[in-house]
Every structure is written in structure tokens, then in C-alpha cells.
Image (spheres, rainbow, N blue to C red):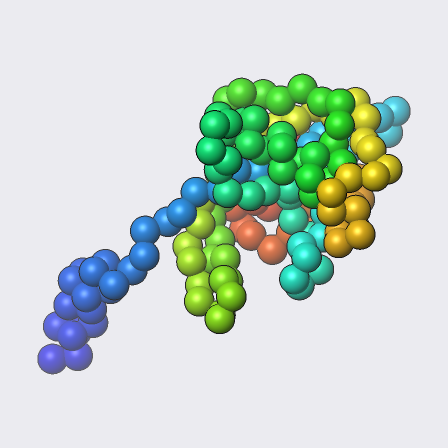
Length: 152
């Protein structure tokens, strides 16, 4: 009976009550330095954990352009070139107000950064840091994002 219940839960009930994954876009901001490739991480506003600049799609913008807009607002990326093909994706559960988790798939676009602004919309809300891809992989929480960073 227990196996039948587990199977019914996994195959029938859980899929019916599970929410579909929502889409976000992220900018994997990179720069080449004399010491090798560096990627830009920022802190999240709520928990202070290290993340990529990311957000919901923006009406009127293609996904790469929305990712670049998020890079400007959250990290001050002002002079950059974006690869219009997604580098990959990762998944996480975003906790909305009230503590409700929403499953999210994040499409990641590589951005070659030439310059950062000192003043940008979220400058007082976040910290930013250039790190090696390996260091970034150690700092972020999502396993599939760690894998993307380690492949750079």
C-alpha cells in the first residue's frame, strides 16, 4: 500500500499541484584581465548571498536585452557586449513575499564588460565583486550554476 501511495503521489498528485517553472534572465558578466578571466557577482537584496544579475523578462525587450538591463540596474554594467545565444540555464526556487516558493528557470547570457558605473540604480542595495569562475562557483548556491561557472 505504501509503494502504491508513493507512486500515486509522485506520478499523479504532485504533478497536478506543482507550479510550472517561471522564466528569468541573467547576465554572466565577464572581463579578461592580466590574471585571467573574471566574472562579476553581486549580492541579493534580501539574503546577501552571491548571485548573477538577473530578473524577470521585460515587455518589449528580447531576453538578452533584458539580461543586459538587469546588469545595468543591479551591477552598474554600462559598456558591454552580450552574446545573444544563451550560454546555459539553471534552476532555483525563488521565495516570494509571504514565503511562497516559485520554481524558476534562469537563462544565462554571457556579457563582455568594458566598463562599470560608480552610480547605478541599485548601488546602495548590493555589493559587487570580480572573481575567478572557480571562486564564483564556490560562492553561489545553485548546483547547475556552479557547473556553468566551472566550465568557463
